[in-house]
Length: 258
Image (cartoon, helix red, strand yellow):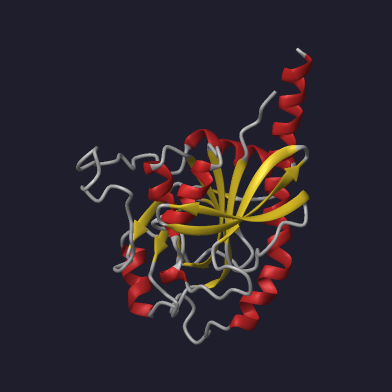
């Protein structure tokens, strides 16, 4: 049985996947530029993994080539993409270390190449529906995987994307809160919208690593704080994905035996 690879995209704190067997790195050439991809297997399932910021975290969020990443995964035969975002909590009740299974987004970016449809292709102007940009079926797989390993997650949340690389101001976070934002990050858009345009199913886990600016007055945002939360939180995120992949491998094995 030929299996479509599962796409994975991650950023800060997630620079490799130790779970991958037979991991090999390659560069995928696309019309939008080259993208380094690590390919291997996880519980026997093919996986294509991209780290947004590159080796050594050298690419800032506003300069990530999102179009090349999504195009590369699509060209490799990926249908489903699991993304991981490290975020600040906009909602006051969110604690560092909590995980959100996102279901909507707000785009507060200003200077990113955000579409495959520039109007100069044979398809002309295309307006893509984003009502369920985070695929409901793939989200359900993440929720079920988290439940299976008894890892608490928040079912649903709005990702608010800013350009970065600076952190947001308290006023910006207050504006995002008024608009219904749950978490703030710098990489989730246009990644999600490009995935939808490319016909991919996309879902994302958001690891909250700090209260966003001004949510708890007098508490500055520090990289030491973020790194400490990543140390304990990243394994929880990976455990959820591991369970999802394992469940898929069991299902695929049952299908082969049928």
